[in-house]
Image 1 (cartoon, rainbow, N blue to C red):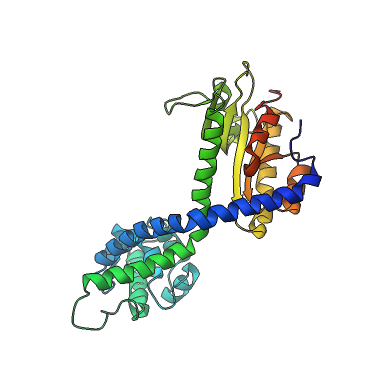
Image 2: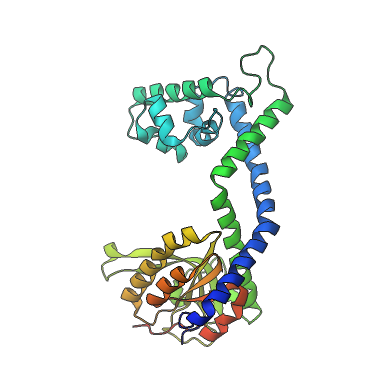
Length: 325
């Protein structure tokens, strides 16, 4: 039985409450999460600076040994250099730079070309290093410890700013899953042990697990794909053959991104239904900016949801699995 998808008269009030809940969390916890991340990133930047003699000697050997240092180096010039801009300035193959961004060396670049490309990247970074941040560049005296720490903090701010949304989204997802766990355990559910070797279909009744892969596709193994789900819950009165309820935790800090991402859930449910039948249980757990356009789209796909500010709506779903056909 639908819980929220068939009650559009309630959507407006729920949207307002959900936005308020997200904003409250953001103001109370997001700055703390961001600061903690910045502290860690600052230490990483200090290590990167030490490996390059505080940005005065960016040798190919450094990039070969620690290719993941490139994002830090790109945040060091004035202005910071985007990936595509660095490719153009250095005149190197795109794959070379994009591989470094993924913390690995390009396997498609010949040794001599790799050496020359890394040297050119280093030269560009050194030439464009921000003199207002790296105040020791061009002077005789070496960088003082306080100067290096100050520069590292600024670069860390730039790095965190470029990935602020993923940082906040990951923290919010962790909080959402913890909230689901608390709610389930208060009702007698227990988390699957880490050494559980069965599939999602073999979960014991009254158990739940986070971040499971659900296989979907045809009988031919080569056509099978794994669909990641945030939570799987096997109801307490489940019998052999039942499927767990699959839950996708979603949060959003603005209305724009939700409408860009709404097709992801539709694709998942269609793949799951094609494999397990129309009765497969798949719901969203929402907190934040999800407007009527988003909700209407999901409802049209037959996808129900539970608002975080009204988590007890899970009871209305009875945590059933539905058909196993």
